[in-house]
Image 1: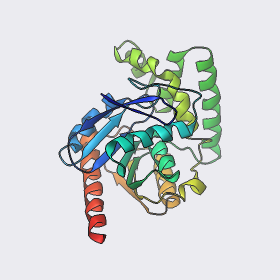
Image 2: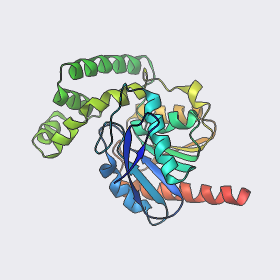
Image 3: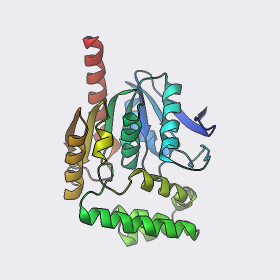
Length: 267
């Protein structure tokens, strides 16, 4: 992996795949650059795809204290390594980070996100508040396994599946980055769609959700698309919260390639 330095001196590790207009993949909670590899491989024939270990994960450092702006600065450092203006795809909480980064001024023309897990509405905000309190308690007690289990239960994974995961080799890797769940949780604020901040997003934006996702996720997707000035919403047939790389890759390729071509033609 190559490395670049964030503004505060933290080392951020990234991988480069393919050749073409630059696209950065921003992973969600507990993910690393390796997890984004299958999607990167599908996009690499048409784009230079950068995957990176977010702060505190994999080969990247974890300078403190953490704040949302630090992750925005990390993403800006990866964008600079890519050559400046980039396209972004953010998955789940990585989508929230991508939106916040662009709203803060990161030079991005094209932005795609898949189901940023905001939880608007009274019930959603109360649920988010309770989960945040429990997550911080578990991490303060050093219960990394409990924090991972909490996250997995939030995503709808059955208890028996979590039990099998705990016996699998991947579990140690999840526990190793469990502390970063607090970072993703903080990026989502109180769970409401931050419409006032997202009004500053200038990039053409594609907001996606799965056809088999929950009704709450679909409503949130529509609210998010309404909050971003140049956004449109698309539902991916047959997909759930965990979208398949082969299902989303052609959608991203079409969006990025068509919009890049249209932008060049306009100039």
